Length: 263
Image (tube, rainbow, N blue to C red; front, top):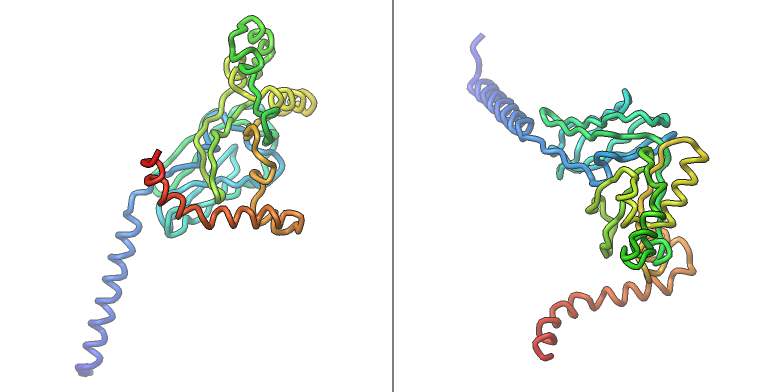
């Protein structure tokens, strides 16, 4: 059968379309994936037992990401910007250190010395922020500091301190790192948070991770999302005040150099 010029041209266009599409797909898959986890997912961390645990970070855009801990796996696909969140199945408490492996294409990140137990956030003002060092005259009373921290050698307790960072919007990452509880690690850690965590650790007989997120003098609404405050009419005056203050921020920022020069 003799082909018409139209059908021949259409076939040629179809072949060209498929070739370009395959080439584009191969190029996308070839983009090297660099895995970056939130700093909360790092060596010596504790994962919460008995619930689906979200693990988030960035990897190759639109590529498959797999997280594995203690034989439990979760897979997801990163969005066009590379952001991903994978939810691990429920984990059982264990004081046997395991690894968490995150893979994306040929890239792999391994987090070591991971325990599974209870994770608590210790938040508040100066009473919660007060460290063992501050309890001893900024560490000047060395004998007292040594006495207060002598019971801090608890390898199944892990400590994380949020840095003081002011943000208007929630963030998925912070600076900081997990530490194995020890007398040395306790020096700059919240005393109240430590004693709370120690009590939980002794009563529940499971590993405990304490995340200290305290800032002296901060009002409680600093630690509450706008969405949560909008759900309660009592917070409306605070939200209005925040909106008013934010409206003049850009102008105040622009005026700052001039006002500074006038001093």
